[in-house]
Amino acid sequence: MLPSATVDETKELWWSIYAWWSCVLVLKMMLLTWQTGQIRVREQVIHSEEDRMWMVKKPEIILCPTGDGHPDVIRIRRAHQKDLKTVLPFLVVTPLWLNVETCNSTVKILIPGFGLCSILYTLLHMKLLQMSVSWKHFFSMTLYCILTYICTIAAVRYTITIPKLI
Image (cartoon, rainbow, N blue to C red; front, side, top):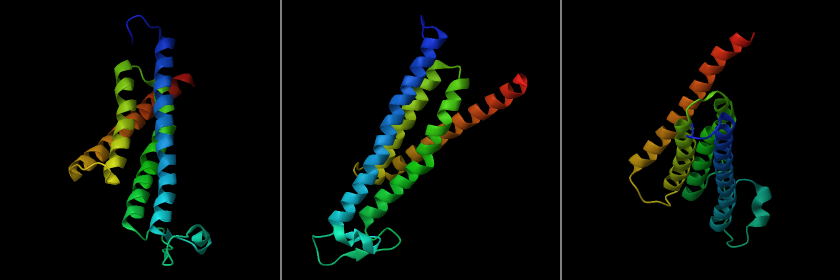
């Protein structure tokens, strides 16, 4: 805990850290959705005939029912799918973990660490940062390790405390 902070003040700090990084991650996911549309318009790639009305640049419109059709679209869709696999479980499980966590430094490291790794992974995956592919794998594994730790601690602590309450 903080040297002069009460338990309630510490929990309030944890929830504010969680709220801040949750908002950042949700905004990142919304930005990816918007950016996907921008790339589709720029490259004239659609995935249904209903989208043809939005395309006015070229006479050659790429219709790809699978949703891909261009390497940039494929990259951004995969980055968004990675967020759906990691960020959404993080947003759901972390509040449970915050209710049973007892270490202040763990919360202060893991929540911002998860957010930063998620952002860096997305930037690397979309090739906005030019770094080695091994960094992308490192950030991906870090995301899964943090998520696994949070889920495991929450599950174990709730398994131990719930039977005591009964």
